[in-house]
Amino acid sequence: MLRPYIWHLTQKENAMNPNLSILEQAKVVVGLPPRTPSTSTPDYVSMKGYSRCAVLIVVDNATTVTGSAITLKQAQAVAGTGEKALALPTAHRNIDTDAADALAAFDVTSDTFTTDATNAKNLLYVADVKAEDLDVDNGFDCIRAGAGDATAAVLAILYILYGARYTVDGQASPSAILD
Image (cartoon, rainbow, N blue to C red; front, top):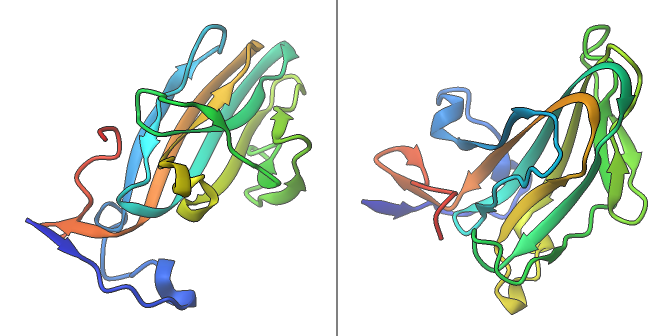
């Protein structure tokens, strides 16, 4: 049974509750399984049931690397209906996860960035999207990351949707991959 959350528009709206598991508070979806992107198109997720989505791009560089161009897209359905660019002014990154765990903010130019091409490094990028950042007036409520072709780099894309608007038996909304 769907039960709406009671929304309090405060700083605590998206605070994690330490008394609940992460899976009771967020939906984790694989957008792109680990692979070298060439003709790969990451999946869309629907934000209808969520207020935010953290898009995680995990990268494992080998040698003689060509980075992958990363963009965010929005659509009116998870099938990609009416796909268009989603503004991405800033993101966060760690370009050597073996050496540190801190993420640093960086400005994104023209809503696209390219993953670092340093050989033999593991990288993490995070872009956080608010549901209201989408063109909701025109029915856009789905997002995906776009990953351009890369050489000698394996990427995986994960979506962590949170701020669930509904629960089903204490769990976050039932599906983010269906409209």
